[in-house]
Amino acid sequence: VESHVQPSGTFSLAKYLAQIIVMGVQVVGRAFARALRQEFAASRAAADARGRTGHRSAAASNLSGLSLQEAQQILNVSKLSPEEVQKNYEHLFKVNDKSVGGSFYLQSKVVRAKERLDEEFRIQAQEDREKGRTPHT
Image (cartoon, rainbow, N blue to C red; front, side, top):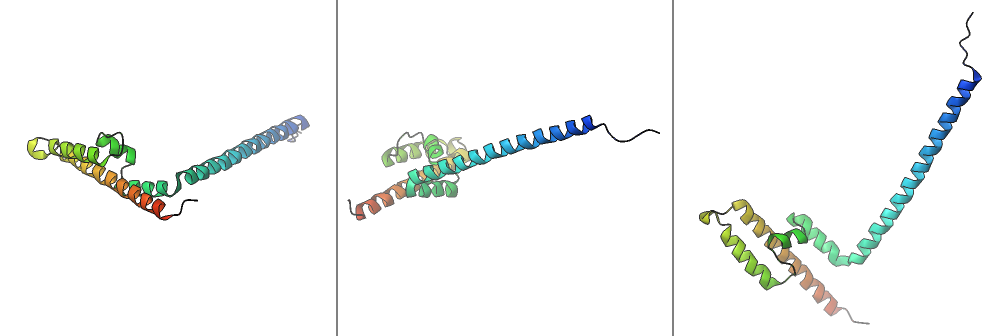
């Protein structure tokens, strides 16, 4: 009569492998949790460093669909200068007019970029006004 009982050596090997797998999962889990906590802390610190201006600018980016950097690239401006933005906007709007063989799509991108930069100018002006009202200590 054959016995269907496994030898004790095979059972202890399976138990040993299961323990190794469990320990490995625990180590990886702890490392992941630690990395997640560090990422949250770094994110919180970055948000605090950005302050309220960053939140307003991010909200403007979400509304317009363009980031500040994208808008600056589209209008080919490196610094936020209302005069340079207006000059480049007028030029790019004219050259992309459909009546002169331009692209309506590119023209609309130029308009959206100008709107996004105008919103950034409004945000900066509001921040400057708020800073002017608060007493300097």
